[in-house]
Image: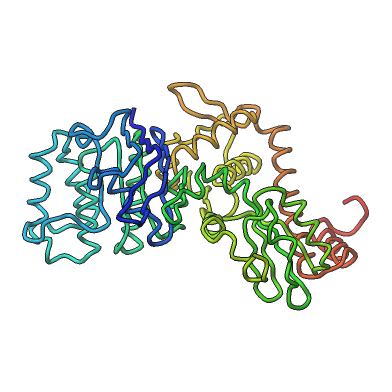
Length: 300
Length: 134
């Protein structure tokens, strides 16, 4: 049982609600991508998950139990900002994990160090940000964790090492690990995860299986001969998540009934109307950018 | 073997459906032969850098569709009877999708029905030769 369960989590800093009533479960063996614009509450969620911040309300359970010292024997995490010690060498860091964690796997650690081309004798303070991230990742995976919590695990890494990180995540998932990770690079998240959770303003705005979301979320795209008309009827239409208008092209993000929306658009006599599948990036933008259309055409 | 599969994670088409389509296509074309063993879920996931649950889902659906069979402990195999009717249908599906896509795009470019018809006729003539039922 390596489930991550976040139940009605809220974290306030003064009047500011950094995380607002977030409930999210990552089942055993699943990889969940946590997405959201800056300030959406991702890092605060991670801090609460790791016991680095005390939730204002709500509960967190990992492997069915509240956080305890035992949780951290099988849980590995990589924080957004490296928590490594500048004055110690790479080898020192491995030695510390070896001393403090019984699951430390020497052979695996050596493989990881080689994969990331780490120089064991270098002090952390002398490494680039990307190399420091690589050290943090190598340490995290060296204990063959069953639960992994990764905050921007590929930040500062070049495209080759970014792919290495994804390979490590997929490999750990294939071994049954449960993984929650955040990333700004949606294209990167897309292949390694089976679930996503999208945060905005501290709230969960969309969550689910990525392939199911891709299969259900559609955009209706209409191209007009000249500038597209203002589509007042969609401003308060419950079927419509969002409308994006760019010159002659209108894209209507459908919550439901794309065929009905396409029919309604036909009435404006566009040149073409198409129902298009949405990639994760479009789904993300649709979920995060809800509702500015009504204001833009003067219907509040 | 994995070189024959490639997925586009950024596409709006769910990854498990991309995999299903490609495996069906490989069987239809004979790239994957009857009774041939497929990579394990884990191996294919690692090879394509794709979530293992996503690969498992594709295999489950392929099994349900009668394209592959999985026996516990031995792995997944293309079904022995997958060459016949099964792959004929897969080939039909694949071709239908490609033609639908081409027609949709031609329409989006502003072509009329007779325009598209003429283009299709021309393509048919080119690849099947002249004559009515070639």
